[in-house]
Image (cartoon, rainbow, N blue to C red):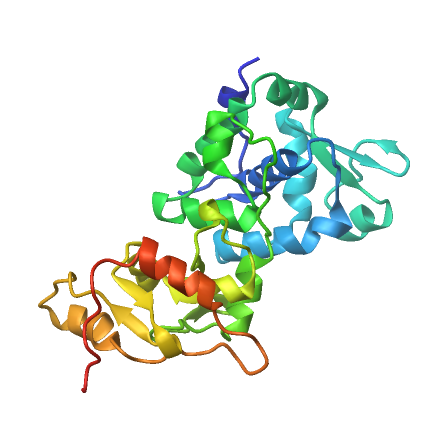
Length: 297
């Protein structure tokens, strides 16, 4: 059985180009949870809010419920559902899924295949991402579901594997009141923040912890520039802008150069700011060259 091909052929509702990423989002979430704890079942009542949040942020604008993919993914042969009464899903009713203790997980055959060939998980995840979401969202989406894609694609598991804390993004965005700490951007679509990300100051790959003292809420532009070393953090939690950065447009001046020397926006009172050790690591290991002097206008 070719699991990658089966993944690519998930049966999805479609009409006139409408998106229906409900099954792919649940499948990605399930693959991530398998990566973290291979045999855990996902009880509907325990994961409902996670799935609802994923659908709200990465699905189409029309309202829907995670009950639909939770039930219907069974028909694709990659997912099974059991209740307190035995095998089988009670249907797409939210109340029934909750009341019967419905729990789902990858099928036994797929779990066995993933154990035999660890890199299979990465190939399946990549197909789900490529066929359903633009590349600009892949990293963010993996972070949202807690999937370590590079590790999954290589199939190499460190002896003492660290696991990301899936709560990191929400903790950091809340700490900074859903505003970019550099520019104050706070865009939303309805109740959902858009274009805001949780940036690690000391990178996770280099032992940076998943906590607020190592996190910044940044807009997508400033997150990219921070990770590329164009922007940094100096003493007094003031923004550094690299002298190496060149930009002559109004946009470059407004959105980058004029940040030099400005204080961070946030975090909110009572929350500890970025730890000095993490600031120092970013300055020495990521930030490029020397900082520009603070702007006066």
